[in-house]
Amino acid sequence: MKITLVRHGQTEENFKGLIQGRSNNLLNDTGRRQCKYLRNKLLDKNFDYCYMSPLVRCVETAFILVGDRVPTIRDDRLIERDMGELEGRPWEEYNAYKYWDYELNCGDRGIERVKEIFERCRDFLNYINNKYDDNASILIVTHGAPYRALRYLIKGKKISGHLLDGKIDNCMYEEITYYFLITKFINFYIKKENIDYNTFKVQTK
Image 1 (cartoon, rainbow, N blue to C red):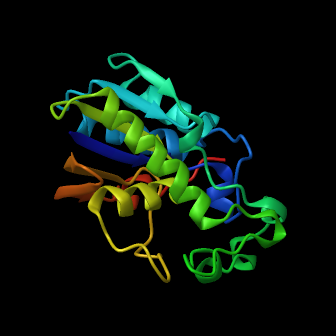
Image 2 (cartoon, rainbow, N blue to C red; image 1 turned 180 degrees about the horizontal axis):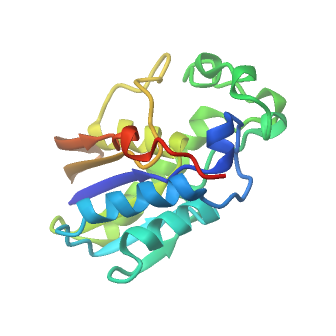
């Protein structure tokens, strides 16, 4: 099975450096340009289905990318991490290392525990594995936290300690082919790309 992971395009809150969590924000003009740019790069990809978070920034991203040619399905398991009391606050107030420590599994201030993110992402992967065969090509449009968890699970990486393994930018995409054997993912990394932000340096408010 081939999986393509995409993080949604930029929102005004992303631009301002604010924590969104599960707030339902639209893409801004830069985000829409990012999505149109990525759409052109994905035109030669034949996806069978597109699964997306129910939050509008992912729905809008998915519809720009493939909404006119691929069946789209909303799935709550792909929703962004609940950021509790930090929602709407500056990113500087968020201790990412603390909240991405798998053993610590911190859930204070109402923030969703990291193990809960992995649990729902694992459930989602088991679902699509049981539903589709190895030849399927699935596009997943989601948020930073589920993207990170899905990538760990699909690649079969060790899940322990601090799980921050690089920044996941708006409209970043990654293609991964994997096979599911018993309870272990055996995968082959294919492609990873960040959108060139110089293309979108003019910010329209």
